[in-house]
Amino acid sequence: MKLIIVVTLMLLFHHAAWAATFFDLSCHTIHGVLLPAGGEAEPVLLLNPQGAKALLAFSEARLGRDIAVTLYGEPLLRMHLLNPLRTGRIPLDAAALETVLSLVRARCPAVLRAAVPESRRFVRPLSQADLKSQAATPRSPAFPVTCAEVTAITLAKLPDALWREDSTEGVLYRVGIHLDDAARQRFAAFRASAEPTWVVWDDVAMPVRRVELVVQGQRLLSDAPLLDGFASDAVLLIVRTLSSALALARTACPDKVPSELLRLDLHGREIGREAIAPGPSPGEDAP
Image (cartoon, rainbow, N blue to C red; front, side, top):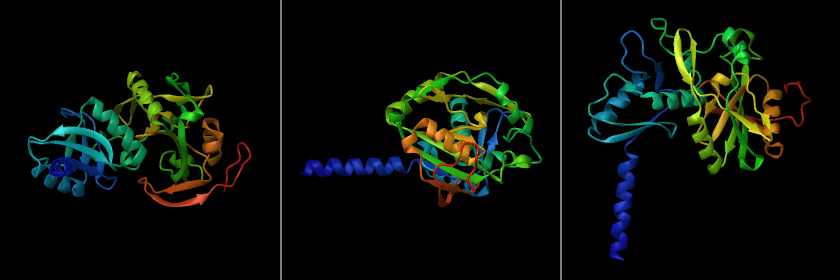
């Protein structure tokens, strides 16, 4: 009995110590992603003053320890703290850069649209010409999944700051195709093996690994494939209309099309839900 108590206490202590090594970020604490240019040695995740202050206090208390940086609990990177992080800059290696860009695109799209007049090294959205020319780019590698491997489908509506002047009703839609554990692991390995495409916009070059899902032999095509995101258990596709979102969901798995739409703000936070009118006609948008 004593042994059980001792082991339990040791496990609890280990869990508490490990939990304390996580520094969790939110959309409100990230300022942008700074890429190498003009003497910069490496890309960095740049925090705003609020985030920088929290990071300094966190790092000062954990010198000499390994920490994990997360975004709303999603792992971004691990690092060993040798010095206090005083500038609000978190250095990124190549693997961490891709993970950060993917998750920030999915969870905090407004962050990558931050206007920084004094610098053109921050990631900004593709121009209208870039978005319209994506159909001419080489096709992405295809990852096959079945309806049985899709655990859920989520649809979300959020303000459109992507297409700007020709936005559709000022909103865009995000389709989340959630995969089971086995499919998710296969997808991660498949995506890691894909050759990155270097995309340049606003004088910024970014590595993007484009992977399209194929369900029952049909590709799930978004309206902005270079900006699709990848969460821990889902592939996140961006489309311009509700009818397009519903069409993707029905193609992926007709019996898992949700009956409600999540309403998100620009930071990816849920601000409400609304019912989806059943069975809109092809090409017809719900109000």
